[in-house]
Length: 315
Image 1 (cartoon, one colour):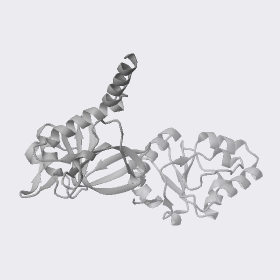
Image 2 (cartoon, one colour):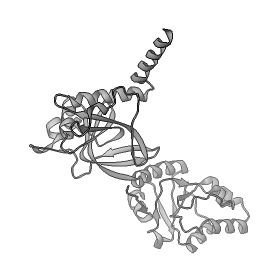
Image 3 (cartoon, one colour):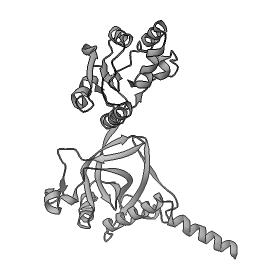
Image 4 (tube, one colour):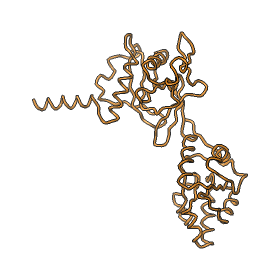
């Protein structure tokens, strides 16, 4: 898993104009790193309560906190602000709503070399836009070998033994109207809400390697509708050569649900034996439709099991 960070300087470069961010002080400290996508409203911290204060987050001071600062005793407010901003982990402070930073906030930020920014955007807009940006940039990421295809609206990560036919299976799915996201290498991010999102590395986007043929351009062969920028990954299918495993050991009912963990997120996993004559594309289509039913709360195997048990009780 690749852990990421972004400096305040990079944030200003990427989103400074869009978020209307202006530097007030401590410009020399723009190399401070932002490591989490969540933002913090330090209302309680400004009152002096620092228990469980999330110093590692970007601190956002809105009109609510600002109005408190205007009405608080000056000496007490200064003491609270200096205590709050003494945490070394604070990446930066942002004042929203177009209000001017109080002198105590400026003094504290200067003392502890914390970048102080202002924006005319209201607090909710800034939090929404900045959280989305940071979530994308800082999301935990990994890269896996496989093919990611969107089948009936379900993101299916196809993995398997070397040379088992993953790319060939994906081509058959494309011919049947489904959509390719990535072949060979799938970059996966864990987005907010513990959702896995997969995409293709930019260098190999829309290309596929087929043994015996070489590199093919999916967009030119199948059209622009055959490729997709990214997709939520909701299921893994592992294609396994039947020669390497006893075929009798595979699940025959579907009552047991196997899971695979990617970036600490568990998703349903199926192992499908590859034998001559099996249409893998059709099997993956059926598996995708069946998973969609499971997502809606219906499991055919459990339903049949209940019916069998019910009929046995009647007898």
